Length: 546
Image 1: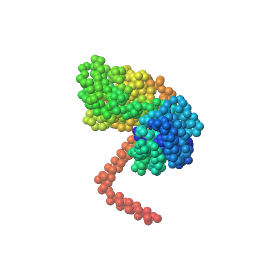
Image 2: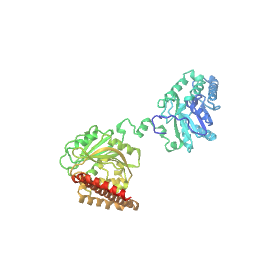
Image 3: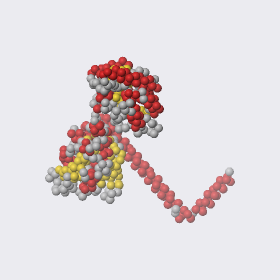
Image 4: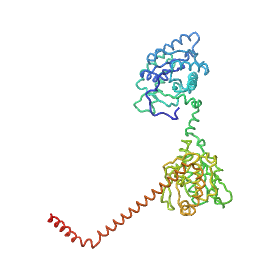
């Protein structure tokens, strides 16, 4: 069962070597899947049809035999038009078909006897009880067989959510003629016209050249075996699984942690959260300042917000751990109180995590600006696990990560005064993959004494990086260690070559400058005529010597 809403392409056939059709009543195979039957016949594929009931509901006992025969003859006439032969009639009593082992075993027997690899049955969502029961029994039989067999559910009374649309444009006339054979049913209501309208409606998402289509839910047996209840899930459950829930509270909760120093820019950070397009967010502010923090209220836009105050100054790492322990979200992201998110940031990252269970963290590109708002650099490198082990290239507010990483032991090392986020990313790397979203998702405000200022303090940087290397190298395999060393060596060589190119370019530039000065000098212009005469005499002398 493909997770799609409506197919926008039509197929010309459902491939198989032997098709078997189950019709609850005489006429259902024509109304529901006549197009497929004719397609198979065109391709030389044998088709067998089983009509399960007598179709005589509401008929008096004295007329049942006569009425049943009439409906069978109508089916035989329609079968002649479609070209598949004569249907087999099991003659269950109409509306007395039961979902039972007896029915399932009968279905299993006939499938195995004819060797069908594609079985048609009415949708399990049909309004008629016989339709639902036959559909459910066929689905269960297919589930038990497994292997290469498939079931194609068709619609008659209730439009279903299909994953296949079959183009029957050039078969409409024959299908119409077959449906007209059912005089007994069309006299009650023009079912043939209803089905024609349904087939026309099914072209709504298709190219204009297609004028009629049949809808199917095509399901491989192995998919039924892995999840027998998936077919019966409610539309609400299906949309929730697809991330299409109507209630934002059903979307996974994302927690934003702000380790606040109560800077004036905090209001900008909160405004950027309030503008997020992702619908289910909580904000947790950890007072890292230690002294009195401004009141921030209980709401950040329409997102709930709460504050945590330990009444003491907190290091960045300790404030981060306090925030991690307090949040409730399935996904977590940090935001410093002088940076901010772009409106799509969390939505894009959550979508990336939702699409793959193996991804433990997703991060976006980050734009760095100075105090005047001018861009000075960007963090936009694709993910490289070896590079991350050498140095950090992912700002903390670029990353949305799974809560499960914290539950599985990842935490901030409170002995680190800086680079604590790098160490945390290395812990996440041990639990899963990182995915890069190549789009600016957040803004990093570079201020003196913040962020890039850490790298300006060479002594502190060397000390912290040495601590982190000593911590992690014992955990790396030989392959990882050699990859790190090779990466660093290649980077050093590339840097040396880059310096050589820069130096060479400088030498060439200096020489060009000197030549330009000579050519533009007064003495060069004054002696121009002398150089011209000298060149002429040299040419003349050379000619005479020949």
